Amino acid sequence: MRRSIILGLAAATAVTALGLPALTTAASAAPASAASASHHDDDWDYSEWWGTYWSSNHLAKAKGHIDVNYDDEESNRVHVTGKLYDQDNRTYRHGGKCAYIRFRVQDWDDSEDDWSSSFKSYKYCGAGGYKQINFWRYDVAQVQAQVCQIGLYSNFPVKCGGWHEIYNAYEDEYGYDA
Image 1 (cartoon, rainbow, N blue to C red):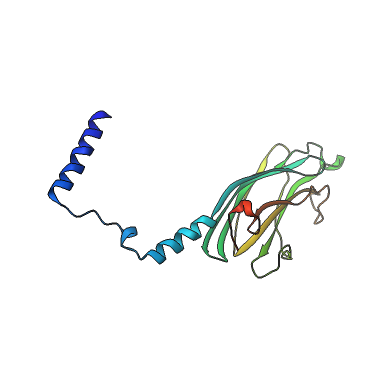
Image 2 (image 1 turned 90 degrees about the vertical axis):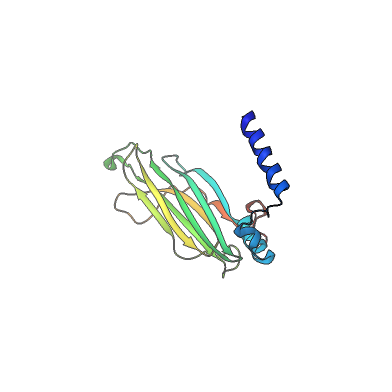
């Protein structure tokens, strides 16, 4: 360690003594306005773990991660990943159900809490196991998740837990300043 510090100081002294120009990088050559704009967009980026969220009877659960990357003020890519767990050990004949999660999003064009009518959902039937969650959405201001149970052949979720916010650009804690 000591040797690398001494060599580094010797190199810096040689550069200064010889009058060599400072090394230029792409960042230092870029105009200040472009550098500050991209830096500001990076400030809005968000990456965080979400969950664990449960169905109301605690027989289904989900947890995961969300990444939000901004291109511009209202242009972003949202990537949601995670796992959906089925913890209902009952047989279907004895009332056992599958794990189910649904996500709802709100686009930038909508007013706050005006949710899209379409859901992204996952269903997993297999007590003791899990299913991977993995999807992308674009130009999103808010994302929420709800964990439920659902019958093996049903389209109607039951025993739903509450809606949980996993991203909301309008809240200060997420770093977006509208």
